[in-house]
Length: 391
Image (cartoon, rainbow, N blue to C red):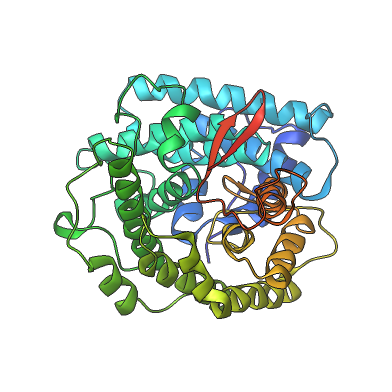
Protein backbone atom coordinates (compact mmCIF):
# COMPACT_ATOMS: atom_id res chain seq x y z
CA UNK A 1 0.00 0.00 0.00
CA UNK A 2 1.25 3.47 -0.94
CA UNK A 3 0.46 6.24 1.52
CA UNK A 4 0.70 9.87 0.39
CA UNK A 5 1.16 12.87 2.60
CA UNK A 6 1.32 16.57 1.81
CA UNK A 7 4.81 17.85 0.89
CA UNK A 8 6.85 19.18 3.79
CA UNK A 9 10.16 19.96 2.09
CA UNK A 10 9.83 23.75 2.28
CA UNK A 11 7.97 24.11 5.60
CA UNK A 12 7.28 21.78 8.52
CA UNK A 13 3.74 23.15 8.84
CA UNK A 14 1.29 23.70 6.00
CA UNK A 15 -1.36 26.39 6.16
CA UNK A 16 -4.98 25.26 6.34
CA UNK A 17 -5.54 26.25 2.68
CA UNK A 18 -2.47 24.32 1.57
CA UNK A 19 -3.48 21.22 3.52
CA UNK A 20 -7.10 21.40 2.35
CA UNK A 21 -6.16 21.88 -1.31
CA UNK A 22 -3.56 19.12 -1.32
CA UNK A 23 -5.98 16.72 0.37
CA UNK A 24 -8.70 17.56 -2.16
CA UNK A 25 -6.34 16.76 -5.04
CA UNK A 26 -5.24 13.60 -3.26
CA UNK A 27 -8.75 12.27 -2.62
CA UNK A 28 -10.67 13.57 -5.65
CA UNK A 29 -8.79 15.43 -8.38
CA UNK A 30 -6.11 12.76 -8.88
CA UNK A 31 -8.75 10.36 -10.22
CA UNK A 32 -9.36 12.70 -13.16
CA UNK A 33 -5.99 11.56 -14.47
CA UNK A 34 -4.55 8.11 -15.18
CA UNK A 35 -2.94 6.41 -12.21
CA UNK A 36 0.45 6.19 -13.92
CA UNK A 37 0.44 10.00 -14.08
CA UNK A 38 -1.09 11.10 -10.77
CA UNK A 39 0.82 8.67 -8.53
CA UNK A 40 4.37 9.64 -9.64
CA UNK A 41 3.35 13.31 -9.68
CA UNK A 42 2.22 13.08 -6.06
CA UNK A 43 5.50 11.40 -5.12
CA UNK A 44 7.50 14.14 -6.85
CA UNK A 45 5.80 16.93 -4.88
CA UNK A 46 8.07 16.11 -1.91
CA UNK A 47 11.15 17.28 -3.83
CA UNK A 48 9.73 19.71 -6.41
CA UNK A 49 8.27 22.87 -4.91
CA UNK A 50 6.85 24.09 -8.23
CA UNK A 51 4.97 20.86 -8.71
CA UNK A 52 3.67 20.95 -5.12
CA UNK A 53 2.31 24.45 -5.68
CA UNK A 54 0.75 23.38 -8.98
CA UNK A 55 -0.99 20.49 -7.23
CA UNK A 56 -2.33 22.69 -4.42
CA UNK A 57 -3.57 25.37 -6.82
CA UNK A 58 -5.29 22.69 -8.91
CA UNK A 59 -6.91 21.12 -5.85
CA UNK A 60 -8.23 24.48 -4.69
CA UNK A 61 -9.66 25.37 -8.10
CA UNK A 62 -11.20 21.93 -8.59
CA UNK A 63 -12.98 22.27 -5.24
CA UNK A 64 -14.41 25.66 -6.26
CA UNK A 65 -15.42 24.49 -9.73
CA UNK A 66 -17.06 21.29 -8.56
CA UNK A 67 -19.04 22.59 -5.60
CA UNK A 68 -18.82 26.40 -5.37
CA UNK A 69 -20.02 29.58 -7.05
CA UNK A 70 -16.94 31.76 -7.48
CA UNK A 71 -16.42 32.28 -11.25
CA UNK A 72 -14.06 35.24 -10.75
CA UNK A 73 -12.08 33.56 -7.96
CA UNK A 74 -12.69 36.37 -5.48
CA UNK A 75 -13.13 34.13 -2.43
CA UNK A 76 -10.17 33.44 -0.13
CA UNK A 77 -9.83 29.94 -1.63
CA UNK A 78 -10.00 31.38 -5.15
CA UNK A 79 -7.30 33.93 -4.34
CA UNK A 80 -5.20 31.15 -2.84
CA UNK A 81 -5.57 29.09 -6.02
CA UNK A 82 -4.40 31.95 -8.24
CA UNK A 83 -1.55 32.89 -5.89
CA UNK A 84 -0.21 29.32 -5.80
CA UNK A 85 -0.65 29.01 -9.57
CA UNK A 86 1.49 32.12 -10.10
CA UNK A 87 4.17 30.82 -7.75
CA UNK A 88 4.13 27.45 -9.53
CA UNK A 89 4.70 29.19 -12.88
CA UNK A 90 7.68 31.05 -11.43
CA UNK A 91 9.21 27.89 -9.98
CA UNK A 92 8.79 25.95 -13.22
CA UNK A 93 10.34 28.73 -15.29
CA UNK A 94 13.36 28.67 -12.98
CA UNK A 95 13.65 24.87 -13.23
CA UNK A 96 13.30 24.98 -17.02
CA UNK A 97 16.37 27.19 -17.16
CA UNK A 98 18.27 24.46 -15.30
CA UNK A 99 17.23 21.66 -17.64
CA UNK A 100 14.06 20.49 -15.89
CA UNK A 101 12.14 19.95 -19.11
CA UNK A 102 10.40 16.76 -18.01
CA UNK A 103 9.04 18.61 -14.96
CA UNK A 104 7.97 21.47 -17.23
CA UNK A 105 6.14 18.99 -19.45
CA UNK A 106 4.17 17.66 -16.49
CA UNK A 107 3.35 21.18 -15.33
CA UNK A 108 2.30 22.27 -18.84
CA UNK A 109 -0.38 19.60 -18.65
CA UNK A 110 -1.51 20.66 -15.17
CA UNK A 111 -1.43 24.36 -16.09
CA UNK A 112 -3.49 23.72 -19.23
CA UNK A 113 -6.16 21.91 -17.22
CA UNK A 114 -6.11 24.68 -14.59
CA UNK A 115 -6.74 27.33 -17.27
CA UNK A 116 -9.50 25.25 -18.87
CA UNK A 117 -11.23 24.81 -15.53
CA UNK A 118 -11.24 28.56 -14.87
CA UNK A 119 -12.42 29.30 -18.42
CA UNK A 120 -9.24 30.82 -19.91
CA UNK A 121 -9.01 28.57 -22.93
CA UNK A 122 -6.51 30.52 -24.98
CA UNK A 123 -4.04 30.40 -22.07
CA UNK A 124 -4.69 26.66 -21.92
CA UNK A 125 -3.89 26.34 -25.64
CA UNK A 126 -0.60 28.18 -25.09
CA UNK A 127 0.36 25.70 -22.35
CA UNK A 128 -0.65 22.70 -24.49
CA UNK A 129 1.30 24.01 -27.48
CA UNK A 130 4.35 24.66 -25.26
CA UNK A 131 4.21 21.11 -23.92
CA UNK A 132 3.83 19.64 -27.40
CA UNK A 133 6.83 21.68 -28.58
CA UNK A 134 8.94 20.30 -25.71
CA UNK A 135 7.75 16.78 -26.45
CA UNK A 136 8.36 16.97 -30.20
CA UNK A 137 11.72 18.76 -30.00
CA UNK A 138 13.27 17.11 -26.96
CA UNK A 139 11.33 13.89 -26.47
CA UNK A 140 14.23 11.51 -26.92
CA UNK A 141 16.57 13.63 -24.81
CA UNK A 142 14.43 14.13 -21.72
CA UNK A 143 15.43 12.43 -18.48
CA UNK A 144 11.82 11.40 -17.68
CA UNK A 145 12.47 11.57 -13.94
CA UNK A 146 8.90 12.52 -12.95
CA UNK A 147 6.50 10.57 -15.20
CA UNK A 148 7.40 7.91 -17.77
CA UNK A 149 7.86 8.78 -21.42
CA UNK A 150 5.06 6.50 -22.62
CA UNK A 151 2.58 8.02 -20.19
CA UNK A 152 3.40 11.60 -21.15
CA UNK A 153 3.23 10.81 -24.88
CA UNK A 154 -0.18 9.22 -24.36
CA UNK A 155 -1.50 12.19 -22.37
CA UNK A 156 -0.26 14.78 -24.85
CA UNK A 157 -1.82 12.83 -27.69
CA UNK A 158 -5.13 13.40 -25.90
CA UNK A 159 -4.38 17.13 -25.68
CA UNK A 160 -3.31 17.16 -29.32
CA UNK A 161 -6.66 15.56 -30.22
CA UNK A 162 -8.43 18.43 -28.48
CA UNK A 163 -6.50 21.10 -30.37
CA UNK A 164 -6.95 19.45 -33.76
CA UNK A 165 -10.56 18.47 -33.16
CA UNK A 166 -11.70 21.82 -31.76
CA UNK A 167 -9.47 24.37 -33.52
CA UNK A 168 -8.06 22.68 -36.62
CA UNK A 169 -6.64 25.28 -39.01
CA UNK A 170 -7.68 28.13 -36.68
CA UNK A 171 -5.04 27.21 -34.10
CA UNK A 172 -2.66 29.91 -35.35
CA UNK A 173 -5.42 32.53 -35.00
CA UNK A 174 -6.05 31.50 -31.39
CA UNK A 175 -2.32 31.73 -30.72
CA UNK A 176 -2.29 35.10 -32.56
CA UNK A 177 0.42 33.91 -34.92
CA UNK A 178 -1.30 34.35 -38.26
CA UNK A 179 1.90 35.60 -39.86
CA UNK A 180 3.69 32.30 -39.27
CA UNK A 181 2.42 30.26 -42.20
CA UNK A 182 2.14 26.69 -41.09
CA UNK A 183 4.49 26.99 -38.12
CA UNK A 184 1.66 27.14 -35.62
CA UNK A 185 -0.14 24.13 -37.07
CA UNK A 186 0.49 21.05 -34.98
CA UNK A 187 2.85 18.35 -36.09
CA UNK A 188 1.84 14.75 -35.64
CA UNK A 189 3.12 13.18 -32.46
CA UNK A 190 5.43 10.56 -33.93
CA UNK A 191 7.02 9.28 -30.76
CA UNK A 192 5.62 5.78 -30.74
CA UNK A 193 7.67 2.60 -31.15
CA UNK A 194 9.95 2.74 -34.21
CA UNK A 195 8.69 6.20 -35.08
CA UNK A 196 5.12 5.02 -35.67
CA UNK A 197 2.08 6.73 -34.26
CA UNK A 198 0.88 5.48 -30.92
CA UNK A 199 -2.14 3.42 -31.97
CA UNK A 200 -2.48 0.95 -29.10
CA UNK A 201 -5.36 3.03 -27.71
CA UNK A 202 -8.37 4.79 -29.17
CA UNK A 203 -6.65 8.11 -28.42
CA UNK A 204 -3.88 7.19 -30.84
CA UNK A 205 -6.31 6.05 -33.51
CA UNK A 206 -8.31 9.26 -33.23
CA UNK A 207 -5.10 11.30 -33.41
CA UNK A 208 -4.30 9.75 -36.76
CA UNK A 209 -7.86 10.36 -38.00
CA UNK A 210 -7.94 13.98 -36.82
CA UNK A 211 -4.58 14.78 -38.38
CA UNK A 212 -5.57 13.20 -41.69
CA UNK A 213 -8.58 15.53 -41.78
CA UNK A 214 -6.46 18.51 -40.70
CA UNK A 215 -3.96 17.84 -43.50
CA UNK A 216 -6.78 17.64 -46.04
CA UNK A 217 -8.18 20.96 -44.76
CA UNK A 218 -4.75 22.57 -45.07
CA UNK A 219 -4.39 21.33 -48.65
CA UNK A 220 -7.84 22.72 -49.50
CA UNK A 221 -6.75 26.10 -48.10
CA UNK A 222 -3.60 26.02 -50.24
CA UNK A 223 -1.34 25.50 -47.24
CA UNK A 224 1.22 22.73 -46.79
CA UNK A 225 0.24 19.85 -44.46
CA UNK A 226 2.25 19.19 -41.31
CA UNK A 227 3.82 16.03 -42.77
CA UNK A 228 3.70 14.01 -45.95
CA UNK A 229 0.34 12.31 -46.57
CA UNK A 230 -0.05 8.94 -44.88
CA UNK A 231 -0.91 5.70 -46.62
CA UNK A 232 -4.50 5.70 -47.78
CA UNK A 233 -6.70 3.55 -45.59
CA UNK A 234 -4.20 3.22 -42.75
CA UNK A 235 -6.43 4.95 -40.23
CA UNK A 236 -9.30 2.70 -41.29
CA UNK A 237 -7.19 -0.34 -40.50
CA UNK A 238 -6.16 1.15 -37.14
CA UNK A 239 -9.79 1.75 -36.23
CA UNK A 240 -10.81 -1.73 -37.31
CA UNK A 241 -8.04 -3.34 -35.27
CA UNK A 242 -8.60 -1.22 -32.16
CA UNK A 243 -10.45 -2.74 -29.23
CA UNK A 244 -10.79 -2.32 -25.47
CA UNK A 245 -11.67 0.55 -23.17
CA UNK A 246 -12.58 1.44 -19.61
CA UNK A 247 -16.13 2.77 -20.01
CA UNK A 248 -18.07 0.78 -22.62
CA UNK A 249 -20.52 3.58 -23.46
CA UNK A 250 -17.81 6.22 -23.94
CA UNK A 251 -15.61 3.87 -25.94
CA UNK A 252 -18.48 2.89 -28.20
CA UNK A 253 -19.42 6.53 -28.76
CA UNK A 254 -15.92 7.40 -29.89
CA UNK A 255 -15.60 4.27 -31.97
CA UNK A 256 -18.71 5.42 -33.88
CA UNK A 257 -17.28 8.93 -34.23
CA UNK A 258 -14.06 7.50 -35.63
CA UNK A 259 -15.90 5.31 -38.14
CA UNK A 260 -17.96 8.26 -39.40
CA UNK A 261 -14.92 10.51 -39.74
CA UNK A 262 -13.09 7.88 -41.76
CA UNK A 263 -16.11 7.34 -44.01
CA UNK A 264 -16.83 11.03 -44.74
CA UNK A 265 -14.45 12.67 -47.27
CA UNK A 266 -13.20 16.10 -46.24
CA UNK A 267 -14.19 17.60 -49.59
CA UNK A 268 -17.49 15.73 -49.86
CA UNK A 269 -21.04 17.11 -49.75
CA UNK A 270 -22.70 17.82 -46.40
CA UNK A 271 -25.50 15.50 -47.56
CA UNK A 272 -23.30 12.50 -46.79
CA UNK A 273 -23.93 13.03 -43.06
CA UNK A 274 -27.59 12.13 -43.64
CA UNK A 275 -26.50 8.53 -44.05
CA UNK A 276 -25.57 8.35 -40.36
CA UNK A 277 -28.95 8.96 -38.74
CA UNK A 278 -28.76 5.59 -36.94
CA UNK A 279 -25.26 6.36 -35.67
CA UNK A 280 -26.33 9.81 -34.42
CA UNK A 281 -29.29 8.29 -32.59
CA UNK A 282 -27.02 5.66 -31.02
CA UNK A 283 -24.57 8.31 -29.82
CA UNK A 284 -27.31 10.35 -28.12
CA UNK A 285 -28.81 7.25 -26.51
CA UNK A 286 -25.41 6.15 -25.21
CA UNK A 287 -24.80 9.61 -23.74
CA UNK A 288 -28.17 9.50 -22.00
CA UNK A 289 -27.29 6.10 -20.56
CA UNK A 290 -23.85 7.31 -19.46
CA UNK A 291 -25.26 10.41 -17.72
CA UNK A 292 -27.92 8.36 -15.99
CA UNK A 293 -25.19 6.14 -14.51
CA UNK A 294 -22.67 8.82 -13.60
CA UNK A 295 -24.52 12.01 -12.75
CA UNK A 296 -23.97 13.02 -9.13
CA UNK A 297 -26.54 15.37 -7.66
CA UNK A 298 -24.13 16.67 -5.02
CA UNK A 299 -21.80 18.38 -7.47
CA UNK A 300 -22.50 21.44 -9.57
CA UNK A 301 -20.03 20.88 -12.40
CA UNK A 302 -17.81 18.18 -13.85
CA UNK A 303 -14.26 18.47 -15.21
CA UNK A 304 -12.75 15.54 -17.07
CA UNK A 305 -9.41 14.89 -18.74
CA UNK A 306 -10.47 11.74 -20.56
CA UNK A 307 -12.61 11.08 -23.63
CA UNK A 308 -16.01 12.52 -22.91
CA UNK A 309 -19.45 13.35 -24.22
CA UNK A 310 -19.30 17.06 -25.09
CA UNK A 311 -17.55 16.73 -28.43
CA UNK A 312 -19.74 13.82 -29.66
CA UNK A 313 -22.93 15.70 -28.71
CA UNK A 314 -21.60 18.79 -30.47
CA UNK A 315 -20.92 16.75 -33.62
CA UNK A 316 -24.49 15.44 -33.52
CA UNK A 317 -25.88 18.94 -32.95
CA UNK A 318 -23.98 20.37 -35.92
CA UNK A 319 -24.06 17.46 -38.41
CA UNK A 320 -27.35 15.64 -37.73
CA UNK A 321 -30.31 17.22 -39.56
CA UNK A 322 -32.92 14.99 -37.95
CA UNK A 323 -34.81 17.56 -35.86
CA UNK A 324 -35.60 15.24 -32.95
CA UNK A 325 -32.11 13.75 -32.56
CA UNK A 326 -30.42 17.12 -32.99
CA UNK A 327 -32.57 18.75 -30.30
CA UNK A 328 -31.94 15.89 -27.87
CA UNK A 329 -28.18 16.35 -28.33
CA UNK A 330 -28.34 20.12 -27.82
CA UNK A 331 -30.58 19.76 -24.78
CA UNK A 332 -28.11 17.33 -23.21
CA UNK A 333 -25.32 19.86 -23.76
CA UNK A 334 -27.38 22.70 -22.31
CA UNK A 335 -28.29 20.69 -19.22
CA UNK A 336 -24.73 19.49 -18.51
CA UNK A 337 -22.22 21.79 -16.83
CA UNK A 338 -19.17 19.94 -18.06
CA UNK A 339 -15.69 20.91 -19.16
CA UNK A 340 -13.63 18.22 -20.84
CA UNK A 341 -10.29 19.99 -21.16
CA UNK A 342 -11.00 22.58 -23.92
CA UNK A 343 -14.52 21.39 -24.69
CA UNK A 344 -17.18 23.30 -22.71
CA UNK A 345 -20.76 21.97 -22.80
CA UNK A 346 -22.39 25.41 -22.52
CA UNK A 347 -20.37 26.95 -25.36
CA UNK A 348 -20.74 23.84 -27.51
CA UNK A 349 -24.52 23.99 -27.03
CA UNK A 350 -24.61 27.65 -28.04
CA UNK A 351 -22.66 26.97 -31.24
CA UNK A 352 -24.74 23.91 -32.15
CA UNK A 353 -28.00 25.77 -31.52
CA UNK A 354 -26.84 28.68 -33.71
CA UNK A 355 -26.07 26.26 -36.55
CA UNK A 356 -29.49 24.62 -36.12
CA UNK A 357 -31.25 27.99 -36.17
CA UNK A 358 -29.42 29.06 -39.31
CA UNK A 359 -30.26 25.86 -41.14
CA UNK A 360 -33.90 25.68 -40.03
CA UNK A 361 -35.13 29.27 -39.81
CA UNK A 362 -36.30 31.50 -42.67
CA UNK A 363 -36.08 34.55 -40.42
CA UNK A 364 -32.29 34.66 -40.34
CA UNK A 365 -31.91 34.91 -44.10
CA UNK A 366 -34.60 34.43 -46.72
CA UNK A 367 -32.56 31.81 -48.56
CA UNK A 368 -31.12 30.03 -45.53
CA UNK A 369 -33.74 27.28 -45.15
CA UNK A 370 -32.31 24.10 -46.54
CA UNK A 371 -28.76 25.46 -46.64
CA UNK A 372 -26.17 23.64 -44.60
CA UNK A 373 -23.26 24.82 -42.55
CA UNK A 374 -20.19 23.10 -43.92
CA UNK A 375 -17.61 24.22 -41.40
CA UNK A 376 -17.61 25.74 -37.91
CA UNK A 377 -14.42 27.49 -36.85
CA UNK A 378 -13.62 28.39 -33.25
CA UNK A 379 -11.11 31.04 -32.24
CA UNK A 380 -10.39 31.25 -28.51
CA UNK A 381 -9.63 34.46 -26.65
CA UNK A 382 -9.40 34.91 -22.89
CA UNK A 383 -10.71 38.50 -23.08
CA UNK A 384 -13.63 38.00 -25.48
CA UNK A 385 -14.46 34.34 -24.90
CA UNK A 386 -14.95 32.26 -28.02
CA UNK A 387 -15.53 33.50 -31.56
CA UNK A 388 -17.50 31.08 -33.75
CA UNK A 389 -17.54 31.41 -37.54
CA UNK A 390 -19.81 29.45 -39.89
CA UNK A 391 -19.23 28.60 -43.54
